[in-house]
Length: 533
Image (cartoon, rainbow, N blue to C red; front, side, top):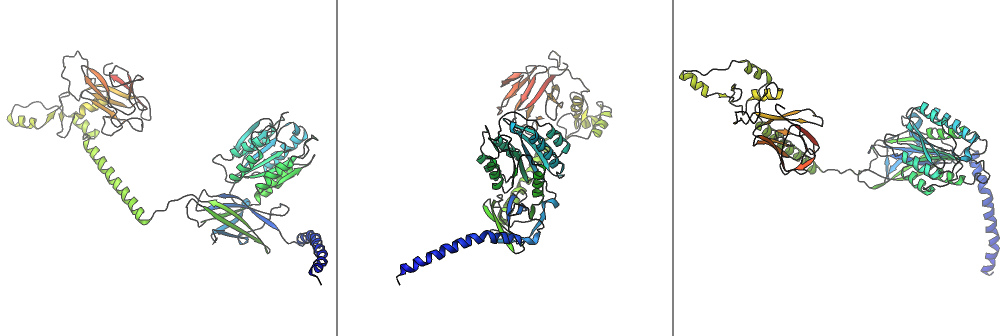
């Protein structure tokens, strides 16, 4: 027999077999469900790497009717990263954890929602708010031709209930996508729970938005947001429910559910079901994800099994970049830190050594109470007197290691002694340690602090060796300026500072100082006061 004849006889059999399989397949699927054989799908909703290497993953498991599969535990899950199984992890329902959720409730307030649709919406939203957990935070957004943030994120149920009651209809357009985009932006705020959800109620028709549906989907996926949508059939026949497909699309792509509410439907049951979905998710806590912090992309595989049915979900993730140091590097760093500490101690010691030795206040008071020693006539007394130093101003005996008279310094700082600096005074040969004025800080944390100005010179800057040290001012130089007394008057001189020295608002290199002039270096202001004025 010719081969072609055989082929012609076989074709009807193949076609008949194809029709038989097509007929039986729906029946087999129905039988699978009818006899309790599970068919479910796991979804990774959110992955929190903020506490790496400890990682938290939120997973939903739903059947073919989008109903959450409850009752799973640690034994139903297997985790694999980059091909290596993980053993150290926990699995609990989100409802039994302390993890809250940040929710943005979006409500359409355009003209198509007037009357009963809006009233039903407000009632359903209020009941949803009443069922919020203690760690949940909710915000409310309405949209028509404008996007209105009715209330920012809060856990205060009374504030949320009051805000819902204030919602009113606006006979305008519907900027649905702009409202979604704004809600997504709101979920980026700090201080919110890591699990973040949008619940939007609308007829699905967008009018006048700058954002597109694809913009919203891209942002929601990038931020791992869950977007539940409720399509409310419009009272306008021209609208009806033909725009529901857009609401369904964004819900499906974010692994959530779209609910179709027909005219007269009680919306409360849809919000209840969304709450049930949120509470039926599983929280997987990985104490160590067993991946080095290299800043590269890695693979997470979650295998879920229940009653002989196994399904797997995959996710790519990028861990934070953590630079690991070798032992040699660690020793080098430790040695460098130790060297810096030694240098800092030596610098502080050198600075301390340069400062004048000051006696405690009690010892100074004790010395002040002593009677002045009169010159002695005997040779023995004259020798003893030579070994001591007397202050040329107060005529009191100073210790041998005092570079200046601490009695005069103390009196000047406490303003107990008024020293005349009148240029017409007969005593024109003024001691270098005699004060002729003072500076007072006019701003900053040390506002009101005073510095005594001496006849020799007074250096000002941020370096510790200055007479007037300006702290916490990054705009001032180490040796910024100087005040000196020449030709019977005070003179302010800039020491080539980086940002300049200003006197009464004008930049200068050198200028005379007058009573109550304002000096500014960096961000620091000082007021000059001359004695006896």
